[in-house]
Length: 261
Image (cartoon, rainbow, N blue to C red):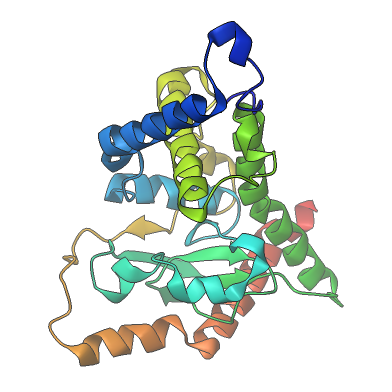
């Protein structure tokens, strides 16, 4: 997994035939997922979510909790993604934040242009015509590179992810990817004390005040009826909310940080 070598590259040295090597990898992958999957692939806790909101605001995007990108740029995958299941089912922690004087209650991801205009997605502005829009697009696209950087780190650490997977079925490829993420999270946890982590005190050196926070006063309960779930679904897919939030972010970023550009 680390070096991405062929299964029979060291067969004479290790006295293992190709089929045995594949079998060892299969057992290793299954064991890691069964033993550590629940811990290292868990959903963010409210504390984790607050840290993501802090980082998002530090990077000039209040209410942002990260970037998202579909595999192979196929938007159809979004319909099968569990990303918003907790939101639709009422299990996600509630958040609240203010942008340009308006209050919002749904965190969002930065995305590229292929994504729909939902209230949970904030896209860049193609061919910006004013300095204000250009400034926003530059910062949105820079912050959105996190996904590509994260996958680059995984590929550098596990060379098996860079090589063609001609002899693996889809389930095995998926499990190998999951195990690489689990092992990466283990490494991050083990080496965390040596990193230069984000410091919320950095807010004191900026013109903005911290406005994004997890709302612990609102319980996370499961909706009691289908109508409530449909209402949440419509809110997530609201194009008007998307446009309003994007406009507010453009104004907010330009007003607070544009003069330093």
